[in-house]
Each structure stands twice: as structure tokens, then as C-alpha cells.
Length: 542
Image 1 (tube, one colour):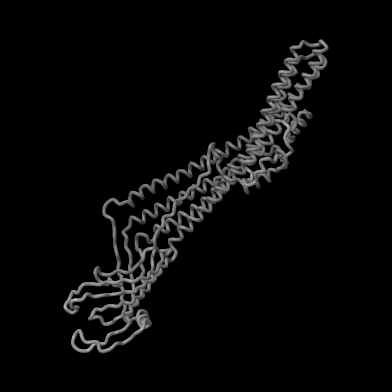
Image 2 (image 1 turned 120 degrees about the vertical axis):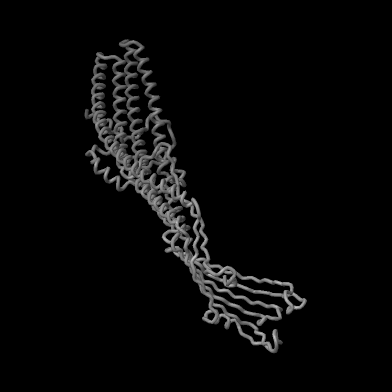
């Protein structure tokens, strides 16, 4: 029994070197499990994709906040307008008006209450040949303040705040998705690490089995040459050697594939030489520990699983959608107010006599006078009022609200389903630990008994009390028992890895790929409040 355990322990940590095709010397990297995990977190491309996904969602938050940024606008231009004479004062000639004008302003959507404000300043210089004009040229300036505040629809939540809230929550979900991917990647690395170590140990076991078969074939050849056994026994032994050599070739291929799978998870994509580096996993398998507390693990998982937390964010997003669409069903009632101060300057024409008078002189007033008047209460214009609009009949918002209510219920049921699934998965993972631990004990006992049977059969063969067939069968049984012990040991390590991972994240489904989601941000231009005026009145100020 002690010999069997020593042999199998050596197989678990040994690296197969014999029966391999000679290759050029390569570097060997002695890799611990912790180092493999660290390399994967730093270099795994799939994990980097999810990490970049968090940056994408952060950028979306920035895009949505842009709706509340102040908007600066300015305009500068010149115009010329010649109109035909429309009254007897103009004579037969037309009126030629030339303008230089500019306007500069700032407007902003407030991040609370959905109100919008604007401040603007405009100036112009107008030259005209109109005989009844009092200024030529005239300099005009005006300053306007305006504010618009929704009272029902959009007051509690509007499209801009809706986008921002959802985008910020999606960013939190993307961070949870990254942590979930880290858990899944770490589990995959640990699984690949122990699989690679097990395949290397399997190569050693297959090599030892081949050596036993070769030794039996050598002994049979000596006995056939001495006439002690028939030649058929030698043929049988040599056939067994060929079969086990094939098994060794397959084991070497499987070990190389397992090594590449581990490389794929931990390799730095820019380091092409890493593919030529031989990985030597030096970590030892963990011993059998106490069985986990299933109820405690389930309770912790229901509070800590990242997929459940992400589903909670989706539920909150669904509730936000319902809140927004409910608000959109309300009448659009807005308080509109504005104030404008105006100023006038330029070259004033002094007239005497009857209308329209004769120009007898000029009075020059510079642009500063117009600007002073604009900021004074000399020529005020103000407005205050309420606008109301409401769709008649079955509106788009009502249909959208009905859909959002269904999606909210779906999100709620999704959380309930995930909680049940998490509890079931963790309980299954805990049972897997117990069953694989018991299988390891059974496999270890089977390997010990197979080792003892082979030793006894070998001794009987040496004194002529056994046959080549029985010795070969004992070797096969020993090989199968040792391979079975390797597999159950790997299964036990895998069950520990899986139990640790499923408490934080769901297992990766077969064929699953990394997906990025998130709503696109719609550009929402900031409106310009200008007050409210009687139609046809105050056009110059709007």
C-alpha cells in the first residue's frame, strides 16, 4: 500500500520526459497556482474585453451628463435688404437697409426639476436711407434672461435624467460583470492548472506502465529462447508493449493540449516566446478538508452573487422606465418667464419743421450708451405665463407604459429565478465535493489493492506459477486504477474550484461568450427658453 501511494504521488508531481520525441532545449517556467491566476488577471484577452466594457459604460455616463452641460452659442453676420417704396414718403426709390448683427448666449438644462434657463446678448448696426428714420446708422443692444420650468410632465423625471440614471446604473452593472468575469476566469485558470498537472501525471503513469510491459516482454524473450514458454507468450507481451506505447503517445498529446489551454488563459498576447516556454505546475493538490456548510454558503451567495446583483440593477432600471413613462402621461404644463432690456444709440437725426421734418443736425451717441440702456430699467420687456399641451386619445406613452410594466414584472421574476438557480447550483456543488472526496478514497484503495495484486502476480510469474496473460491483466488493472485515482483527484480539485466560484458567479455555460450591453445614449439638445408672448406681438424680442 505504501509503495502504491509513493508511486502515485510521484506521478502527480513528476514531469514525463521519456518516450517523447527529442526537441530543442526550451525554457521551463515553474508556475504556482497563485502566479497563474495573477498572470490571467493581468493578461487574459477575454477579461480585458470585459474590463474595457466598464470603460464603455463610464463613457456612456459621461455622454448622458452632457445633456446638463451649459451650451454656448454665438452668431455674427451681415444682411442687406432693398424694399420697393410702399408709401408716398419714400418717393420712387426703394428703401435700402444694411445690417451688421451679432448674438451671443448661454443656455443650460438643470439637472434637477428639468428647468432650462438662457442668457443672451445681442447687438446690431443698421444703416438705411429711409427718410423717416430717426437714426442713421442706429446701434441697438439687448440683454435677455429667460427661464422655463415644467410643472407636471418632466418635473420629477425627464428624458435627460432618465438616461443619466440608467447609464449610471449600467456602469455599476458592468463593474459587477467584470468581477463576475474575474471569478469565472480564475476558476477556469485553476481548472486548467490542475488538468495540466493531471495530464502530466498521466504521462508518467503511462510511461511506467510501458516500462513494466517492456520488462515482461524482455523476460518472455529470455524464456522463449530457453524453451520454457511458447513463442505465443512473447507475441502477446510485445502486442501489449505496442498498445501501451500508443497510450503514452495519446497521453503526451493530451498533456500538450492541456498545457496550451493553460497558456491561452495566462499568456501575454504580445509575448510570442511564451508559447515555447514549458510550464511546470509545482503546486501540490490539496488534501481532503471538512465538508462545506451548505446552508451558510447558500445564504452568503444570495447576498453576494454578482448575477443576482446585476439582475437587481435591471429591476431598478425597469422601475425607472415605469416612473419615466408614467410621468410622460401627464399634461405638459410649463411656466415660462423672460425679461429683456433694450438700448438704442447711433447717429440721431435732429429734425425741425412739419412731419417728416428737415434734418438740421445730428446727435451722436456711442454704443456704450445703448449697452447702458440695455442693463437699465429704461426699456424693459417681460413676460410670464403658462403653456399646456396634452394628447387626445390613446397616446404612445400609455402603450409604452404598459410594456414597461410587463418588463418590470419580468425583471422581478428573473431575480426570483436566479435565487432558486443559485441555491440549487451551490447545493449541487457541495454534494459534488462530498461525492468526489468519497470517490478519491475508493480510488486510492483500488490503486493500493491493484498494486498489491500486481506484485503478487509478478512474484508468482517469476517462480512459474502464473502466466503472461495474468501478469498482463494485473498490469492493466494497475494502470486503470492509477488513472482512475488521477481522474478522481482532478474531479475533487475541480469540485472545490466550482464550489468556491458558484458562490460569487454562475458557471460559464458551454459555448458562452463575453457580451457587452448597455443602452445607447440619445443626444438631447438643450432647448432655448424665450418667454411667452401674444402671437404677433413682441416678435422683435423672440
